[in-house]
Amino acid sequence: MRLSPVISAGFRVWWRLSRGATLGVRGVAQDDHGRVLLVRHTYREGWYLPGGGVESGETAASAIHREMMEEAGVEPVAPPRLIGFYANHAVFKNDHVALYAIDEWRACAPDSVHEIAERGFFAPDALPEGATPGTRRRLAEVFAGVAPADHW
Image (cartoon, rainbow, N blue to C red; front, side):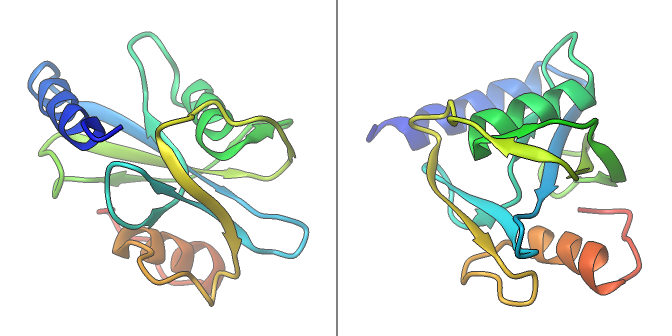
């Protein structure tokens, strides 16, 4: 557990160097009260929309389905709805993120024992301290009508 940040950082470096371009997915899921689900990882600071990388041979839609189940304990029961596609060049010059709405879902057991430190539902206008700037921008676009950006 104590080596997780080092191993994770090393994996991210290998991942970036071994691929010409990368694609990630993030999902917006709300509970019955309109609160949005965020996760806090064990290996980096901040609250994020659940998601992760699209694996080789996997579609973005299947990746968000898998990631929501693994990280968030949310099983989509209807196809995810694409909200937007963003460049994430601050992290890697060829990284992109697809943002999906998970409009219909049911709870399931998460499958990320060591990756997620905490999960929680938060009102879009009362996000927790530590919600990342990208998370805040995406939620402002989705819930407050802010014009979508090209960059995460």
